[in-house]
Image 1 (cartoon, rainbow, N blue to C red):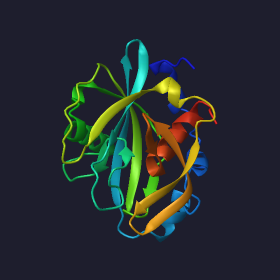
Image 2: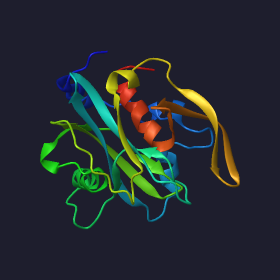
Image 3: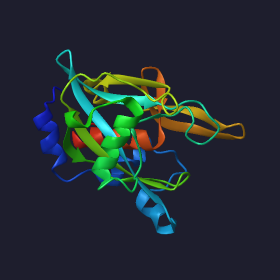
Image 4: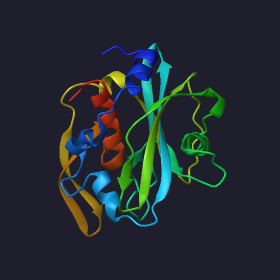
Length: 209
């Protein structure tokens, strides 16, 4: 599928697939975000950036891997983003600021194309709002190595292929193992959980199942 930035912006302005797009890529134990939010208390708002840019006449998007540390998100692949702070006027600013801080992008190069459906992460009590941006130049990454182990890109066309969901058993920590976890394998890295749910809704926007 050969998409243009105008195509993406137009499709994101239409009705989103919503939480139904999260289900096929969610671990079997996971409830829909709307269900989990009924029982959530004092959750934090956060935002992530799905950043698309043109590289060698091809659209690519950005992912990063967290450093390995004790905790539920250690070593995971994610989109740039984080918690809303008092200095942020809205969640769009949160997404851009976090992208500046984590991987060194420059805010003047961001163009907002649209947004996707929020994802609630019960284990960390965050409601995550994904935004889709076009970055109007080839980025020069400057990762904050306290928060980022690696930054990498991936062709958008590869994400939009059919039948790319895989399954594996994952060791979450020394005592927890989840079986048959749906995920994407991107640059030989397992992308699962909230990030995979966001990516899958983007696929569904273009009727890719």
